[in-house]
Image (tube, rainbow, N blue to C red; front, side, top):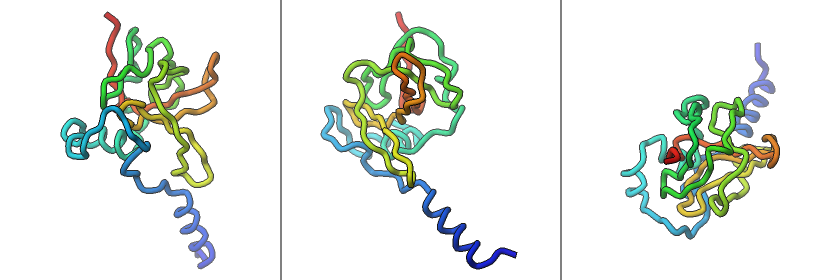
Length: 160
């Protein structure tokens, strides 16, 4: 039989480890490309809006881009800015498209403290502010970085 102390400890742990509420604005602007919430909602699916505009994360292993191996560029779904070269993509085994490097002047970053006791680096499109994913320092050489991205934030354009 659980004790009152056990129940209170469990409830406190659940509250502390629970991700915070989604943010209305992912990164502080201003940005070159701006849209109203209604305009974003009209151009994005519900999942794309939740990820790109509210900072949600798509479920692992659901992105069609995981198996994409052709040469080309990955663009921001929100403003079509080229972000990542397919040559920098690799299989990290995490269930999200991962890249070891980014194109010059393509993304912005900021601290993400939504998870209690964990500091992450959030990355977003530098032109429209759309949430892309997070950057971790456990990637392959030469950068040692893993840009772990939500596929719904990206559009792949094969090389001509």
